[in-house]
Picture 1: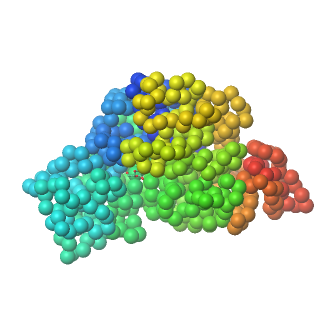
Picture 2 (picture 1 turned 135 degrees about the horizontal axis):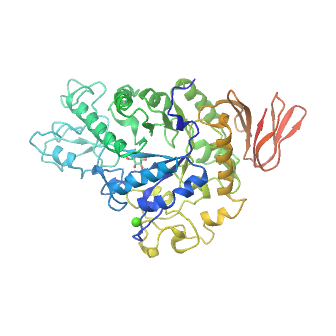
Picture 3 (picture 1 turned 180 degrees about the horizontal axis):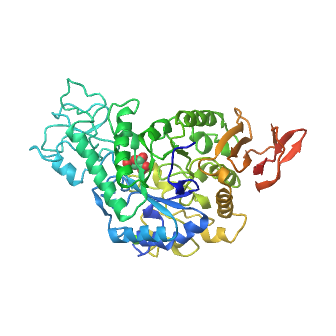
Length: 516
Ligand code: GLC
Ligand code: CA
């Protein structure tokens, strides 16, 4: 059995909203909370039950808001704290849930904590970040910011060089380096308290939990993640005491570690050991019809075993850091990719726009620290009106330019075409919602996942039903052995499965689900 999860996770399907780019309600060229509220019915109608909202807090936006300068205040461009609360309420009214994005590993250099921390006289924030005790020495295990403080020291950074690393200490502090603190020292313990305060603030206001940014990066020189796991266990204990229903998902990519830390779910990512890229984003991705799924499956099975059902492994369609799904998977193959996403265990995550096959916009200048990621962050395409219905601002003032192609996909057009990707995704979510064996904690067993071969086949089962999923994104008919008789069809895209001499033949570019 899986560990007890909040009940709503069993059949959850998430939708990731990048607030800048979803819907602009006041014609300033950038998305906002009221715009999201306007589109909640769309998300609900798609069949999604929950939202992950990218960071929406005060920030100089040198990393799209992952450089927080005030954790307690929403960025004015999105709206006020009250409007965010209204968004929570509107989400809950529709029986949905919403997670905020928590960035515990670093702040912006503009955060007041960092300003105080840079002062030469000791104060409450001197140990909030990782500082060496002289400017000529750099911190171990991370890059550093140097030469901008009165304080004589270098400060560790976590990601870009304007994102100083909050201090959770070193796993095994080096006694020669007096400035290295241990997780149990006062500085790191105060950091943990500060993070709990932030979580308490937003949970009290009504969010349902957090997606946690770079969750595995907190404690430094922590090769096996043991120190960071301990920090998260401490935070989970606080949640269990004060907000037992709060849901946590990590950007970690190593479920055998993150789930030990008390996270309910962990993402597979485009970095890390998961082979997630083999599916959708490499030179020859499996779902393009000419790739290999076997390494992914091998690693997936290993992760399931190692994570001992402490929580869920979640496979996203993409996110704001990756190339768009449609960059290397095209046409009907996108439908097969979604058939996979909607029939795997764990909770599926759909990155806004992936459900209509929004394209990666080539050739954009970096916006807000996006660099190559900018093309995956372009504003949502709703309809055929000005700016595809994203905003009433003049086209030039959209904060990221849109896909200018005449045939750019839109929600409106796809809703009226039953062959569209959007309609297929809706059907697939509905099938998942109607069959508990397909949901988060149904069992999975791989039937066929051979090196360089097609199709991919697996069973999803629980006490109530046994389903066989066969996905063939290749351009040829492929055969697999299967020893049970198939019963009725639950879902089919493309031509039907044929039973030939005890084998099953899957048509080119097809996806099927059968009871057996
Ligand atoms: C995570 C975010 C990414 C951000 C980085 C630094 O990977 O998803 O967008 O730039 O962390 O916070
Ligand atoms: Ca706006």
